[in-house]
Image 1 (cartoon, rainbow, N blue to C red):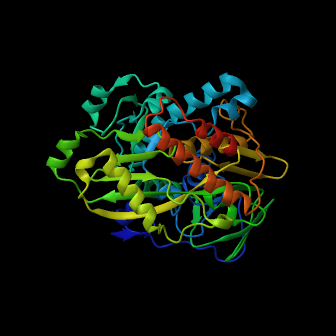
Image 2: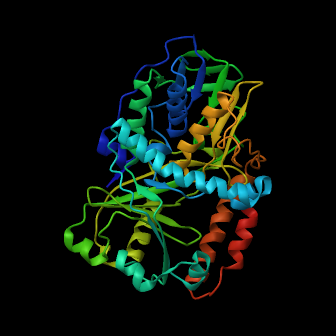
Image 3: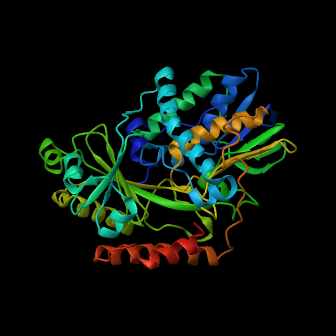
Length: 441
């Protein structure tokens, strides 16, 4: 089994070689730090809105190296944050508007991919969420019975389910590589292999020179903590994925997963999965959730115990797959603000802006954030700039060792709550409620 190598998705496509390094000091109109989907979508829409702008992206590795090329491939309308946090600043109407914007963004991404000729194995297949205990069923409020769940996918122990049609399966590396091509075609330069070491008003200092610009946008998601002065802004939370060998027809028939719908569960330490275009199951979840000092992985390598935990999850849901080989494992980081809610912000006075903190629900949200940053930078007052995550502010995470201890205790509580509910507790465990308070969710 391969471990790391960025991700299985990139191994399918082929790892790109960094191009167009920043060659000494330069200037431009808009400097974007981070070549993931947030930065790329922002560059795409800015260049589309005003082709005269000199927009440049600075990326330490290559476009899509981070979570954008490692995620589970859920182009989902899931809210990127806490409804309670957004409602506190914009009321329930604000939460509704953000949900509607995310739902429409699923179609926006699919439409751009079609127009730009981006082949990313996209199938608008929806997502099936299953409950495997009475407590999960109550939380889910699922309208599907166990029998109706089994008609789609035969998940062991499923008692109920919910189906959301506003979700599409995606091959993440193909998507982000396609968006990068579309960005370059619009005249945007992506300076890969160029690591930002400092981001301040008007200036991005890198290991290859200094880029000056009146507008500087930070789009680093889980890698934000690597910038001086930003270590406690967003927590780099780890998520890991394993992918099986290709399954034969008999195995697919046995588990009944004949469509391309995404699959998740309602556990507190939840899992997420997709049936890949080449007939595998890619399944992800939290392994070791956080590394001391906000450290990140090395080239996507993950821990053996995480691989075994995901293997156990896979065979718990599908016992008939107990002997299936795992071909690849990898991990990546996502950005988690202290209130678990994403934000998009821009200050015209300083020219500084940022977007991110998607808490694992960013594949769709990156596009919406990119369009929102476009409007903020261009000074347009639109429905997007009035969404409740626009200008959303949150306090910083605690210093070490408090945040390391807190995060590990948090996920210990969630796993304990799951075990109690799996053992027959008919309601959400009070331990999970304590974990929510610890998390600030």
